[in-house]
Length: 450
Image (cartoon, rainbow, N blue to C red; front, side):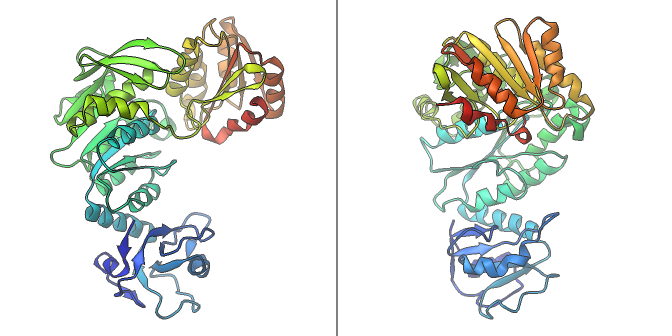
């Protein structure tokens, strides 16, 4: 990032101090506990905190200017020459500043949403685009009304393409992000059950995901799951590209081979290889190919991008476990759709024959929770040696699996569960750890790995 303090006057005309000076800003500071020289301090106001209380600390940590809410008294400790810009709401101001900086840098914007797979698709997209363009992407889970502006403001001024992940748990949130980012290309990976308690149905989720088109540029395109019935009507509205496995899709993928570490598939007669297992990841790759074609990226560059892909943390991370076992940490998050998909991947693994699932609760499923947990058992058959669950609702998985004749046990204590898994690890064992973020099942990992 690079801005001059005096540029901010174009966005925030009310100011004091040396606000008209060309003082360089190289980052945004929202956490005054971290050093950030030449930064602009933006005090975020939350339910249980108010960043305005930490302006003094922010200045000590390197802030050279600040945005300030008008209805909050400015501390007397602030030097009279320190640049301050006054606004009605600091969160909205952060968004306005991001829109200003985005217009200044003027990159091609790719927006990615979906119930599952959006982070994987974002990582794939950035890796492929980076073979041809200077690329910036969302880091971690910075995909909401605060995280997305911070992602934009972290861009280098030479950025040519920015890949933005857009998350939500309420209606209207994706619309806000889309209108802020004004994407040239958008992707809806799928429609699952995540946050269904807030939307009532998958139809409600589909409607919310389609909000990503609200800010789509006039000549932009939306890449969607062509195998999803809930998106078929939207696909008829123009400026859409359907991707998937069905023959009627615009981008059709055919899986050639699957093994533990890679997946080979064909699109338009061209064979591609992903350095990861799973048919569901092939569909994610079709969205990337669809956008890459629009950007003039060659097939060779697409394959290069897939080959050098680096995934965000806790997404099918493979670890060498004790006694020669394999531990797969996929505990970043979970929904019924993603849990079934990753179980399918484990079922297809060939390097280990003894397959154990450690599954925790999936959150925000509301009144559908128990039924959706039980439904996970549909993906489990006698190729799975055992299923161990932990949490309030995951016991429904155990009950359903036990009825199908697969060894199943529910635990109420992580330590007891960890000791049990350690006691059964062999050189032919693979253990999958999967649950919603709030379960923190990655805490099981350290005792299981070498």
